[in-house]
Amino acid sequence: MGLNSYICVSYKTKSISSSKPLLMTSKITHLSELESVLCNNDKINEGVLQFFTAFKIGRLLGAFDSIKSKGFSVSVLLLSLILFRLRNESVCRMQNRSKNFLEKIDDNTFYRLMNNPWMNWRKLLMSFAKQFAAHVKAKGDQTLGVTCFVLDDTDVEKTGKTMEFIGRIFSHVTHLYPLGYKMLLLAFHDGKTLIATDFSLHREKGGKGTYGLSKKELKSQFYKKRDTKSPGHKRVEELDIKKGEVAISMLKRAVKNGFLATYVLVDSWFVNDSMIKGVRAIKNGAMHLLGMCKIDIRKYQIGGKELNAHQIIVKYERSNSKYSRKYKSQYISLVAEYKGERVRLFFIKYNNAKSWTLLLTTDMTLSFVKAIELYQIRWTIEVLFKECKQYLRLGGSQNTDFDGQIADLTITLATHTILSLQKRFSSYETMGELFRETQQHLLELTLWERLIKTFLKMLIELTMILNIDIDDTMKKLMQSNQASRQLMAMLNALSEFDENDQNKDKTAIWLAKAS
Image 1: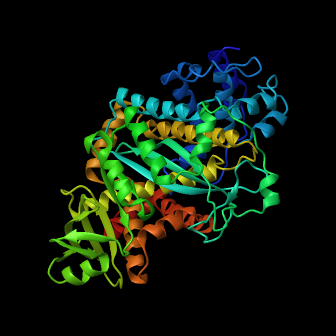
Image 2: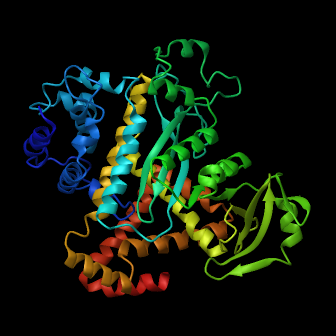
Image 3: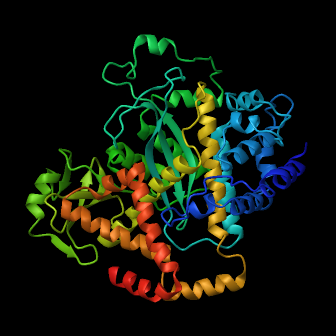
């Protein structure tokens, strides 16, 4: 069956005509940018079909057809896996459904593809990201905002100890040691949308070097040999390489594929001399690092003297301290040298806080306010993680083959890119709507943007009062199921209040005062 006819059959026979929702049917809220798309099967169908046609997905996926799987082209199988993910279904569950439009393709055909070490899943994800950027450019929707790479890791928890290379990892959210992998993700923010470009999986050896498992448990794990030249073998090699080294490799690969940003945004776990040097070496210093930094014993050279963060605060708190009315914080801005690299240090102390936090950048021209605003973009990757885990079954695969785990994560992130494209353009179907939206934007922010800005300010105020770290709080909030549900309920209540015509003016006034 050809790809075009396959798309037609799948949509006409299953998606469009089906009365059952493809995904969850919970009430729409404004917490997530994509939630309105993920909760509406009509929009999903429309968005995917738009992606298939506008992005020439047959050509994109057809590049992988050299790898055959039981007589079926890879493009058809990959398309099927994306449709499964949009339906929030596993391969097994979809194939067990009665009257399935894929009844001629058995489960093993899909698993053979996913477990094939010669399938270049990294190239596939990058291809989706490049097609997204190309379509945005073709639409003339490129923003004038600052472009950024966002780098962060997340826990991919599992339950089976027989999975290949599985081990216990330390969770910074729960402070426990669940079974699973660490996923390091590199995402690109074009000023409006964050999309995944590359990722790697890692394991942690632990104190005894046994990955938190017994010798018996390690022996019972699935294992297979891979050709050293295969993409799957390269993925296995990354498991025990330091995340910082892999991160630099991913950045270089993204730049080589046409993605170039002004800043690389990271949290405190990635701010070190090797990361700084690695980022600055790419494209002869075209990108700058911006990230929170731990206040520890590392030393910076200022005025010919080497001082650690605590000594710098004591020395310059009175003479160099300034106050930001916008963020209600005291800050110290200094230029220093760290391991041979010039950096600008922003020591920040919010009102009522007892301790200082440190924001470091290699861009000497950044002001304090601009640095804070740019760093807030980093939090969008926490939203991406949350969306993928909650709606697209990120990490839900129980495949014992490590190649299958890589395939599952790739399909999830590629599907998220499709939904991001639909979200990007769904509000602007005609020039008239675009014109009216532009006029409205000049007068006021959208409800979602106002709510988020208000919430962030409330959150910052709360962290100042409680003297807790804002960055760590944001990460925990987005990764905690209970906290996110409560937050969604709160924002949903606010949005319901605004949807009442009699209360719209009151809501606008309340939001204006709150912000």
